[in-house]
Amino acid sequence: MRTSPELSATPTDLFDYRLPPGAIAQQPLADRSSSRMLVLGDGGDPVDDRVRGLPALLRPGDCVVVNDTRVRAARLRGRAGGRAAEILLVSELGPGRHLALVRPARRLQLGDTVTGPGWRAQLVAPWPAHPGGRVVVVEAEPGIDLNAVGELPLPPYIRQPLADPERYQTVYSAGPPLSAAAPTAGLHLTRALLAELDSREIGICSVRLEVGLATFSPIREVSIEAHQMHRERFRIGPEAAAQIVRARARGGRVVAVGTTVVRCLESCPDGRGGVLAQAGETELYLRPGSRFQVVDGLLTNFHQPRSSLLVLVSAFFGGARVRAAYAHALARGYRFLSFGDCMFGWAA
Image 1 (cartoon, one colour):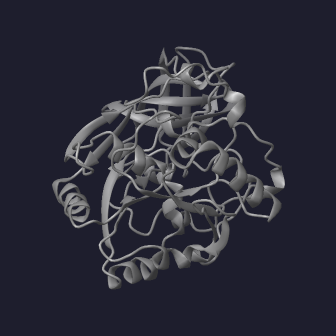
Image 2 (cartoon, rainbow, N blue to C red):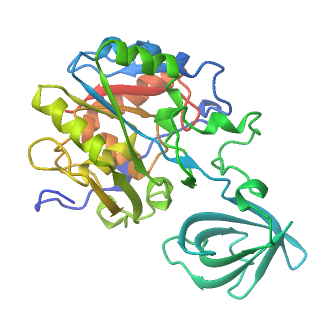
Image 3 (tube, rainbow, N blue to C red):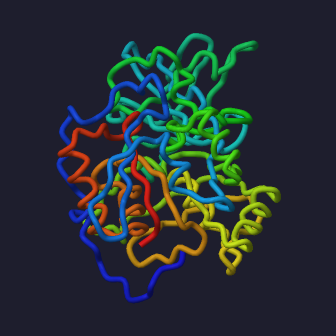
């Protein structure tokens, strides 16, 4: 993490705002790229646009970076002691051993077993990172695929079922399902929009960050500095790193689709505006005072109050710009959170 040493305690209340329940999108739009996009200007008022207008804001030689992680069916519903129980598998520690969030956390004790159709999970250790966190050992019967019997882990503020589970995946998601949540900014992009970027000689490359607790855990502390970021696995491949370095060398700008991409890229700067090919874990916590060495532009959703994601975008765009943008979006009826609208702008 690269921050100024003189940072003092910053109240978490500065990153709080009133989010009416009616502003939270419950379903994705039929056309992903028809979502509204609030474009942040350098000085004037933000401009209302649509995601399909993104290519016109970029120029040949820019490089758009996406997170191609795929969401797994990480929510297991079962029973424990005759009561309904739920396990959300956040990350795998080893074969069958996971960090997980359990519900109801107050009733489920270490040693308890949750059973479902073809599987059982035992709570074997605490996970202090979250009040509902536990280490669980999951055993499945022969022939049972947990990704087939589980459910996509839609956020708890989404109360309507999703007719098509693929709408909680990006169109470019690849590889095995590894994430406990979607990189939601990427849900706005379509194959047609990606093709238009390519036709305008705007580069596109993918990195991978497995979305876990670090991304969606709220800040519960009084100051943002006291918040502990948790580790998430990531990979920047040699081809993606080389493409970003080439774009930078030619004067192109690096545009991140989502905060997970920002954290991934800013974890591996090469000191010259590019990135190093690398795989590992990151607990990078970007907040006001942090230095952004790679990312120039950001497409991002509207985030929950008191979240590390809101802290990140405030650090990137500037707190005053973000507060004005959120007030504008709420006043104009923008849709918030995972299935909602988004905003785009360049670093402050």
